[in-house]
Each structure stands twice: as C-alpha cells, then as structure tokens.
Image (cartoon, rainbow, N blue to C red; front, top):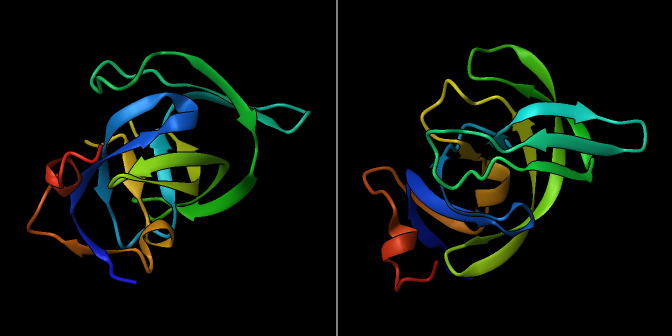
Length: 143
C-alpha cells in the first residue's frame, strides 16, 4: 500500500458533525486527534454533549451536538499537563477517502487550528512533508 504525502496543515471534513473543509494541523508528536469545541458535558446515559462554536473558523456552525461517548482518554496537552478528555468515533473524509476515527474533544481556542491530526490516524496511511500545506485540496480537487 502506497502512502500519500500530506502537508503540515490540511483540510478534513467530519461528516457526523457536518464540519466541512476544516483546517487541521498535522502533529506526528500527538497520539490522537483533537477537536476544538465548547460546553463539553458527559451525561449519565453515556452521551457527550458539546457545541461547535467559534467565530474565527468558518466551518463551525454553532450547533449543540450529542453523540455516544467512545471513551475517556488521558492526554498530555501541549503545556505538558495530563487531562481527561472525552472522545467520539466519527467518519471523516480526507484526501478523497472516508475513514472511521476517534477524536478527543477539548478547548483549543488558544490554538491557531481547530483540529489536530495525530499519529494514530496518520500511521501506515500518510507521510508528512512539513514544507508543504493543503496538499489535499490541490490533489485533484478530491475534497
């Protein structure tokens, strides 16, 4: 299986959340994917509730979302602290293909990009060329 070359910043669509062409930073140092959202709550029935609200990122639509909780994951954040984060399973479209993947939910309001793509998603599928950006969009218009 040949691996596709991707840049350090790419666009991804999360079909279950109706988020399309969302800017994502590719981070081979991160284990998991992370998505910026607000008002994150877990209920007693095993669902996670969150809002996709962000004035800066045009793909965000402000809706309140309710999805089954996949699992609670311990994640070391960019400041080095361990955090418990809820994660969800979703279908994404990336480079013209659909993938099932887990995404942790967190407040990334201080970060430039609303989504992070980690090595668990990238592994055995993609090679990262850090000198490039947005190869998915220019790659035959697949997204």
